[in-house]
Image 1 (spheres, rainbow, N blue to C red):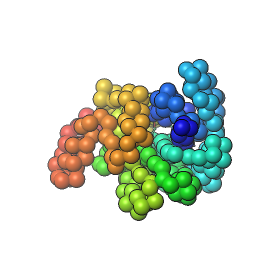
Image 2: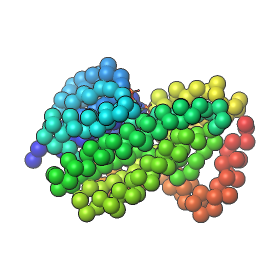
Image 3: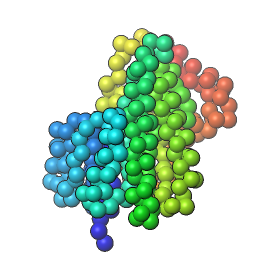
Length: 262
Ligand code: NDP
């Protein structure tokens, strides 16, 4: 049996990089995208040094119109098939709502939401022709509960949740499963690179609550292998989402308590 093929967006660091290493160790053939080509080359070399199959490197900015779809098509053309699309690339911008320029909010949506719409639109006909496949979307705990100073980011992740729920049912008959992975704080470049000067003094960054990128990636791999609806990491993000859905005011109270230092 030939090894299955996955395209991972945002593979140059963090959860995407760890997912690539874990899938390659299981024999998956991979296409890897991100803007930093040197990081992708380094990752490809690490995969091959560990005995994995040579990945296809597709550097570039997926927020540019047409770029995300082109990467899906190149993956299918190179390997002759595509089994799983992992929409992981994302950016986080944080600041007081009124201080964030609208253009920056739109940039967040271009990468976190619209590029995903593009990859899914390109992948669905390919997966359908093959008789099915999987799409794994990397949402966030804030796909279910918005947090202060993360308005645009939370909204982009809510949008991803809505798209995923909708397509999960709409495309089930075509044999295409849609999974959403909802990580809480994860120790990657994303939170490390947040511009803290845009946040109020005393903002609680909570480094101690973050899971490792490798742990989040193990959850992504589970979604790839099983195709279930939702995967929370760590586990307590799920009950936190339930509390917010059932008692939004109580959830506000808890969030306010958590931010009492600001
Ligand atoms: P990283 O910053 O480590 O990784 C983000 C990846 O996305 C990088 O490989 C980056 O590559 C890529 N990327 C960003 N913008 C673009 C673009 N325009 N074109 C192509 N690639 C792009 O963060 P994480 O690993 O933490 O994030 C992975 C996913 O997990 C994201 O969707 C994030 O929202 C989500 N998440 C993260 C959490 C956390 O606390 N870290 C919590 C919940 C969800 P490059 O810069 O080379 O282009």
